Image (cartoon, rainbow, N blue to C red):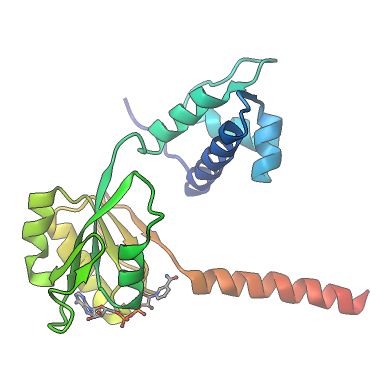
Length: 214
Ligand code: NAD
């Protein structure tokens, strides 16, 4: 059966709904509605129903959704009912901060840390040791790594992405400020806090201008 194409914005909202459901569960709430999910996720109830409709029908008209069931279903849809093994390439400031970050979800386990700098290779980390980038393909195979995180300077990022793909990773989380080329079947997600700051700068300046012109 052909898979329906799910818009990227829908996937982002599913992650938000999951966070909302986890929070409701922590508060002991067992039933919810598209209106409540919408309010907490700051979207419309229509949007919630439309997003969930991509994956079949959840909830019962007039009764709403069971929080634990919808949570389990969303985790399954998001591929979070299993563990993903990660490689981090580029063990500078950002790579090391991510490698040692204690709050990584139980679903994501960094098991390979790579760099080209001989001064960094062999350096111990909380969850491993920095290894030479040349060893990356072998380690990816041996440790069953499926996701590569790129934290190298922009000019090295494409080459690193190509090598990760050749080594067999299934997806890439890219922190370098470049648009990467990858085969169609290898999803690339970009993380860019500077882009976030620029968007924030737009909204903050707009609000300030409105205040000044009131
Ligand atoms: P850094 O200079 O501290 O670290 C980069 C590391 O990559 C170094 O250890 C270097 O030896 C290694 N490296 C270089 N070429 C390599 C290669 N071919 N293979 C393996 N390792 C290689 O840099 P940083 O401050 O940690 O930033 C890393 C990247 O992340 C940059 O591209 C930066 O622009 C980006 N960044 C993104 C965000 C974000 O929000 N997305 C935030 C901060 C930094």
